[in-house]
Length: 270
Image 1: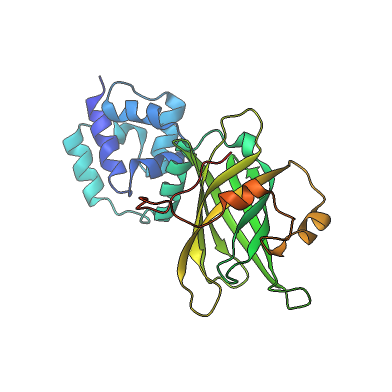
Image 2 (image 1 turned 45 degrees about the horizontal axis):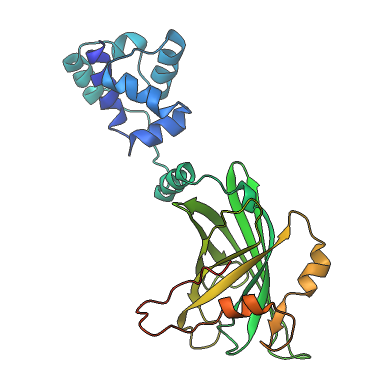
């Protein structure tokens, strides 16, 4: 057992915001580091050197009896205070460690939902989920036009996707105006091929009222590759009776509530 070393290591870690932060800065495996903290294992000569260089102590010092080491650390001037990472990075790292299984959902989708800005109209947007550095990011592109010939308004949302306990969570922000965040929760498919995904989207109306609103939403899978120019031309504001939307999608995005329902819920229609 290496209890003196473990106590000294725990003392050094206490100057940081969390053990997780120390592990990320050292690029060391957390379970292995926990073994050092428990006193069950002592690091190899190479790993011990890395630890000492990181904390700014000598190898013989970190192996001192804890009472002596504690006094040494208290009186020794620290060259600089450790800079804590932004708190949100730890939360994102934890979410990433819990989120697995999104690979089959990567690609392009049409997104359908009733417009918050133009009541009675349906928006068809383009969403692309892609993986970068082990994380899944996405972009949503909207083209809002109340009627043919009128001004077209564009919106671009960027965000991250997570699959947690059989639900797909999407959180993004509008990048052109920076005036809102939206959250979408989708019910995944248990089929081998992705077709349509249904769920709910929460956001704020782009109209002057800025009323927080929730709407049912459907993602229709297009494939891993699409002709971006042609696909974006199909993104627009549609009338429900335009004939351009599948009847099943129309049914799934209606924002009605059945008798006896007390909560606004997604429709698991596909």
